[in-house]
Length: 183
Image 1 (spheres, rainbow, N blue to C red):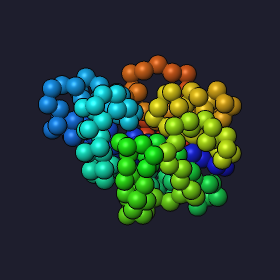
Image 2: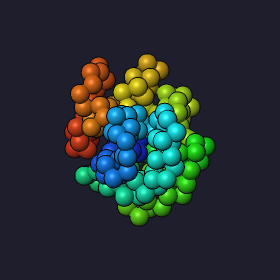
Image 3: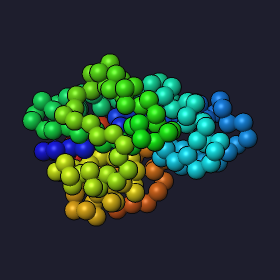
């Protein structure tokens, strides 16, 4: 099976790291007021864009691997599954400049196994079709619904950004639950 995984808030707990930086650098409340957009990498104002440019590399580097992510991914990989990391991180967007080498080093440092990685991914449904992905795991309801609407199974990984939002996409709360859902 070919399984696609988003990185931020699926493999890593980026939201927790992001919140720490938002609390430290939110001079006028604009960051806190736009927290959901920020968690989605949406630099909707010049101040938010500046925040990303100045801090996203540190945020990504300091994010912890989610509990049991490495073990479950290793088990999936060792059992013959192909693991594709499909992420918006990449060099094409100013706010994510420098994230490709940082991400590759982070994955190596934390022993995260994968078959391939796709950076600069905005249209995850298209990438899933192009790569023949059988199931996509993401924390974005928008991406999960688009993938499902393209006829590909999707699983929503619960995060602080989506936990109160309604969806008909299959939802999991942690890596053990995800492992069961993938079997």
